[in-house]
Image 1: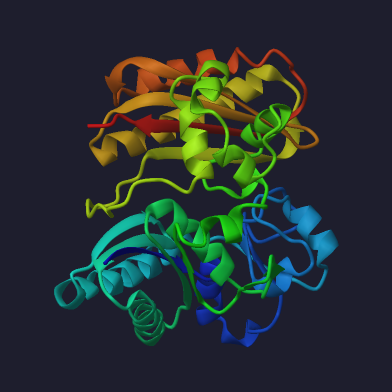
Image 2: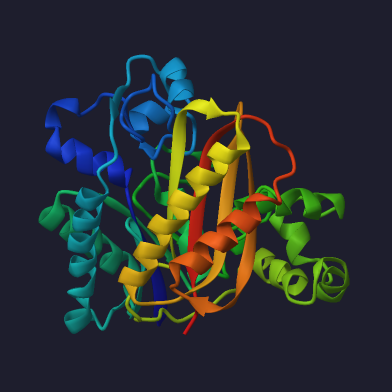
Length: 355
């Protein structure tokens, strides 16, 4: 039978740092920004020990320090994480010759592995052990009959152990298929579905769709008329656990390139905000040019004080790597932010054209 395995590295960034600093094992570790909680920045990742204090990715470092004052704060080191990720993906690809596995990389710390096997749990166990032996990193594996179920299954495999609907979790491997989909997921909120975020879940709730079971039973035509001809039926498919079945082995390529800057002091002059955005856009354009792929869309993110984040985006008239065009688009987007409150962060991202 064909099975999809979702391999998710445990606390990946923190784990890489712990390999370099083994004396920190067992201590709460927070990685992000410059590693200084007195300066502005956000949490990139937190060790499980830090998460027990409520520290989460995307949280301001200062908030993390208040919640966990004994945490060790470290600066982010992206090249080190990229190198570690490449090692893990090489391990996964080595299963291809013996197990007929196909690997689809999602990012630094996760990938899908597709394989025809009568013993998917044994394959998952071998993957976990091989990754640990060759890289000293640990991972969880979710097993599913499609990508959506495999991805969600991983959440039940992760520590700490959870008790939800009698589901044993935290063992490192969990299987979620059509057979147990509603038993495991039926009474969970729609927000638990991969693809439904904080903005979509309230929209569904307004229509009386609070749980996965309720969403699965919804009429696709009704949601199509209400939420859009593509999105409406797609949400119902998510509720039923239906998604792509086969793993694609195309090499992973970044979908975008971006830069952001958190300011030591809030910017109160909009001319300074424009100057920062222009500089970031030029850096992004250089990355796009180096990538050798044109940008099709530009996104600008602004975080106002104290911590309200807004974004605007635009599709370019034609895909381009031209620095002047990317900068002009970013500055035009900046003018869509009509509330000129003090600014603590500006980000610019270019999304690549799909070819």
